Length: 192
Image 1 (spheres, one colour):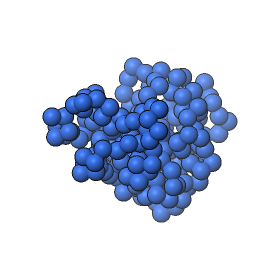
Image 2 (cartoon, one colour):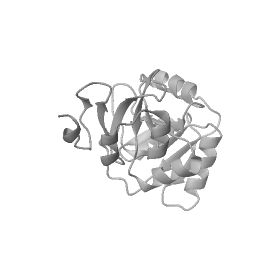
Image 3 (cartoon, one colour):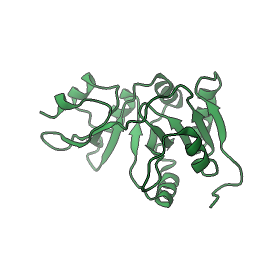
Image 4 (cartoon, one colour):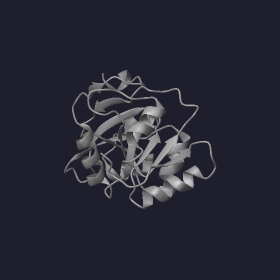
């Protein structure tokens, strides 16, 4: 089922114009596939693309997504415990209470320089959720392009990519913190 009339723009992470094009797409509330610090992620600007991502994720059988942010953006959105300042940026996603205490966000401050620069230039956090359709995992960029080429406006390819491990996920709303998913980052120091 095609969601759009045209195929996604293919961008390459190493090309000088790619960051500028990514900022453009995100500012236009377009959905993209980005090579995040852990796995490829379906991404869009926080708040303005929430419904689009929910619709696409429901179509693919998923509803969970994280927020990628700079440290400053994370602190504007959530109550960030001081202990996390000694760990971030890294492949660690933390469920944190929102600044107003009315909900939670799963926040990650990625270490990847490309994503950090994108977040800084955009001036806004972005949603990121695994590109995996329900029931199976895709990490090969060819499969990702085939799956999403008519569902998003842009796909960023990282030819040097050698990662396919998700981030570690912990719930920081519990005492002690609760490990929800083992991933790339060793969070054992946060769990005692």
